[in-house]
Image (tube, rainbow, N blue to C red; front, side, top):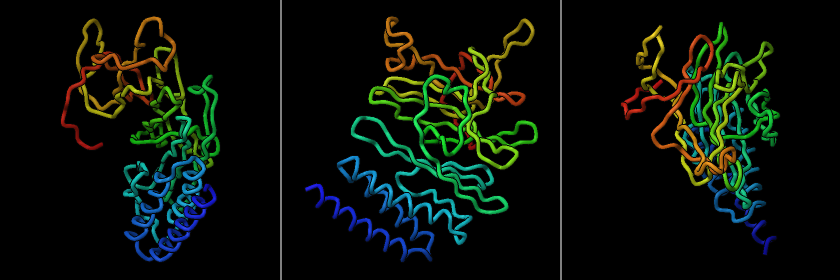
Length: 294
């Protein structure tokens, strides 16, 4: 029975390959074909079937991104793929996950750089040790795996940095959200992580928050009010910042066991960009503002 299902999948894959080849002359056609190929992944009932379907999609997506004919096209409408981009559109990141039967996920992605020339870089997910995860730098070849849903562009000195907000279906019992930095080193190589997060536990290269699988955690870029200490007075200041739920254990006895952490419900913290650092700001007043795009 498994061999029959595998044969059907391979036939579907071949049909998808042919459909893709016929659509090469049309950007809209390529996006439509890629969406159809991607949808095959979610229709599979086994891990091996999903991963094999993903291999087909991965190859076709790589070919499309690497095509000089479509260098300026965003590929931002493929259902199942999350896309973020720099303000000028010259850096684009595509990420997606394949859920597995044990409750974990495999992550895949590409970084597309189109500055002086076109470069498409594969993100290779490698399981990282939890210890030291917030204090180490990673490359696309040692990427930890996440779905990035927001990119914030800032400058540190003369260099552009890209702050990423991401989600990770970490284990069967917990998820993680993270704030990370993508930058280019002097040789133009991509690096994840930068020691610019000023937290209550010192300087970190990224911020990672694990929480209960059934909980929902707020982590977004927004325009809100923070409290600023000026001499002996505390004043409020409206500013763009990263806002997040303060996470607490369901019960005091569960302190330190992050799979039992949930939002406090009425308390929010965040990070404000000041003088080249993301600085922790506590007790933010979160309101439902009409925020503009930034």
